[in-house]
Length: 255
Image 1 (cartoon, rainbow, N blue to C red):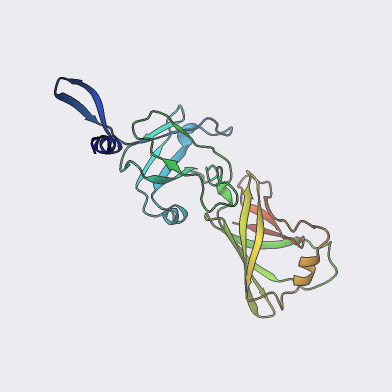
Image 2: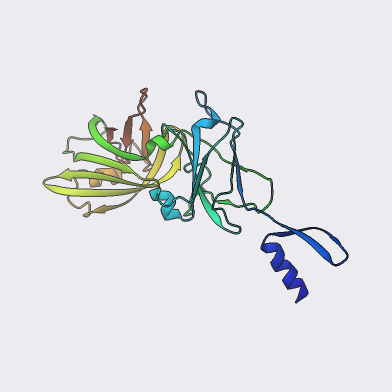
């Protein structure tokens, strides 16, 4: 019983600093999160990167109910103590003011449902590394611009692409219209890089029975691995992307 009691005291963050006879001196350890950036792309400073902290994945994805926040210092270090508790797993969102830099997806293990989580380190001074990429610029709503390539197919009708929405939870939705019917095509991001992300097709609402190139999409020889890809079209504003589906239709969107 005494051993269990002593273990409970340690878990509740009471550190025994020393004792003299029957006197025990204790000090409460303040829980904290210590974050460190080891690399940042040229043109940015560590101080350009902010952090919001959330308690749930839903709050992280919707960016609501943050419990604490801060900005890295000139050495790339951020220590947060406000509203931090022991034994709690937190969701860390690091991002630049221009919404280009982010840790979004950087440490995600593919096939798992969550991004890397940062756990409080109790009284430890060990810092957690935050890996920064230039991929937050993908997130948001993109409006149809034009079809840029249709050369790999026989002549057939095309859907009217309306918008593409890329969400923080890795979901992508393509809104399209054909023959007075609205379509919602659902994708999921499987890999994220600085200027491109790969996706897999999940489902369509309604079904693809009347979709103009559904069969050709399934039998496409130009892209046999069925890889759906989004890449940025180089421009100074990072506001144009190219969507290449597994039928090799190439569609441009802009913000």
